[in-house]
Image (spheres, rainbow, N blue to C red):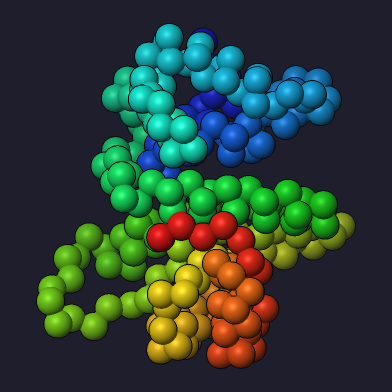
Length: 221
């Protein structure tokens, strides 16, 4: 029988095209779902439940890829829970996909320490789909700049609830000044932007161009 946590985990994996085990452990197994007590070994508990869900046919068998292993759902999970059908993450994009989810997990823990919560995570492919509505771009078309991810950041003070839409963008040395400035301009539609860079020099360049700080983090493109 699937628990509420199982359904949330399967929905998370299906919506985002998969997630690494450590991210799932931090998001869904940090605390016991019944007692609320802090879990001493979230990753062990996560792997144990993933194995059980795999045996039940909801989690797809995985081929070990070390740091690039993604947990994905099966057609049985999609059909049983009415989850979205997504094409798999392509091999060349897997490292960036995982790095993005891990960075958001880091941000979520920091925000939680401040009494805030992260929800409704969307990655670039989802944001693009929301804006374009399935419309295919053609060569020569102008296209909108999309961040690597967006999430809702909620803070509750008494009866007052404040919610911001926060964009996340990874910047590497490959980005030109023009690229950074165009993204900075496009991202004004969000309430806040978190910039991450692949080195101190790239972070300084982002700060100089945008006037916003950039954190040095693992960046994979």
